[in-house]
Image 1 (cartoon, rainbow, N blue to C red):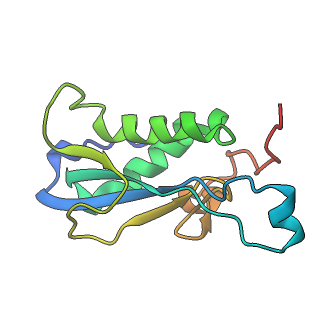
Image 2 (image 1 turned 135 degrees about the horizontal axis):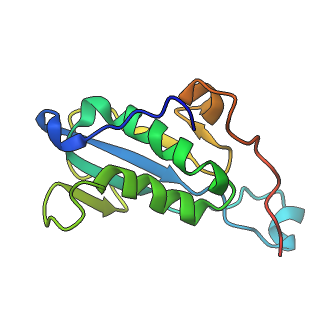
Amino acid sequence: MTGLRIINLTNNNMGARRHIALDFGPKDHNQEDKEENKEPEHYDKIYLYTHWGGESLEDVLRSALIRGEGRLNDVSYLARIIFSEMIKDEILEDTGFGISPYVTDDQYPTIEVDLENQTVNEIPYKEFIGSDELYPPYPKDKN
C-alpha cells in the first residue's frame, strides 16, 4: 500500500457535489432465461453522494481501492469500504453524504464503478489507481 494519499473531502470546495455509482452487475438468471438467450436483469445501481469535494472524489476512490484490495471480489465489503473512505472524517455528521438508488444532485460527472468487471469509468482498477499492486479479477466463488 505504498503511495497512499490521504484525502479529506471536507477541506475541499463546499457545494462541489458528485456521485459514485456502484454497479453490482447482472442478477443470476435461471436456465430458462439462458436457453431463450434473454439478457439478464441488472441490479439497480447504488449512488454514493458527497455534497463537497467532488473535484477530488477520484482520489478518494483510489485510496478506497488500495485499502480494499483484499476485498475486490467481495463487492458488498468493497462498497462499504468505498463509502467509508468518503465519510471517514465526518461519520457522525447528519449532512454532507448520502446513499440512494438514483442521482440526487450533482455538479460533476458521476464516477461509474463496475464492481463485477472491476473497472472505474471502464478503466481497470489497476490502471485507474496507477499501480500493479491490486489483484486481478478472479471468478466469483460459488460457495
